[in-house]
Image 1 (cartoon, rainbow, N blue to C red):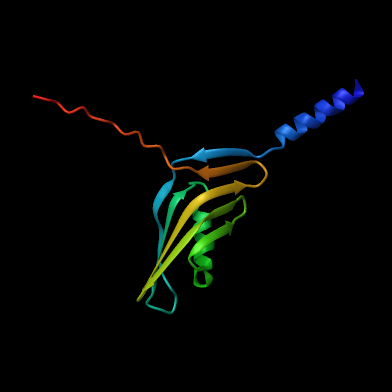
Image 2 (image 1 turned 180 degrees about the vertical axis):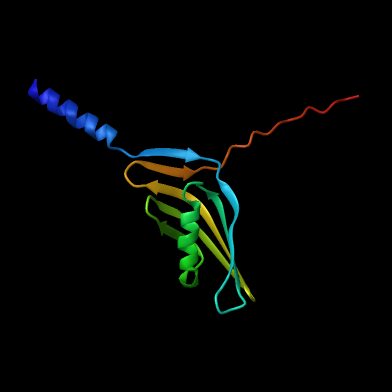
Length: 131
């Protein structure tokens, strides 16, 4: 009987300690910040895509603080409450720096993982009317 109780306790602990995975197909898209670089004529425009509303400002500030060192490609942003996995695109043209960050996955520690999943578009077939 003791072994059954210990086994039950172990299994319930294991089941409830797992991270919950949620999929989302919505998010905030658009320009988050436009600013001038100090001591220069350059302007920086930051846009994010498929972002989570509660953490988008903190992610924006983290990327803008380090944008001079960053390169195009996969990029992980570590903030207080989460680790954001995404793809970074930086375009530099004359006096304009355009930064685009595409969210792919957000890991909220040991509790929750949110993964972006493209929405399924149902095609509506309209019947052609024959006269």
